[in-house]
Length: 139
Image 1: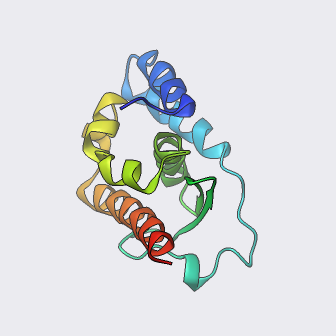
Image 2: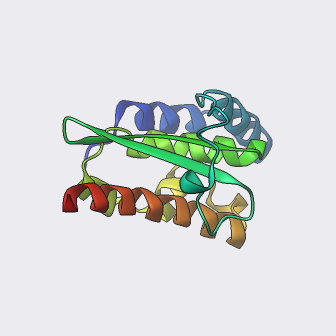
């Protein structure tokens, strides 16, 4: 499966980082790229359950492809969300089903730094994306 352009950019950027400190800095920079959510978007209806930190997710389908926006109060988590969004940008509902989260973070060199709770939270975000795509398909 071919990767979205933003995902290829992420892989290239993280490949340039020789160690965790550099990856952590880069992750924080990627988190700053997220378009801020306004107060009306930071509501219970958009909240992802299963994350220790507060995470909100919005999805929109345009021309059969999914585009997501996400936010969190936790800086490092914003970075992780940003690279997850890069991986899923513009995918179809079927493409979302095929995303292997563990493989993606391993390819970025970030898997060893993901605590079990953070990994569970990111899986909850991906699952919520899949649910949104599935609900839309059922309509």
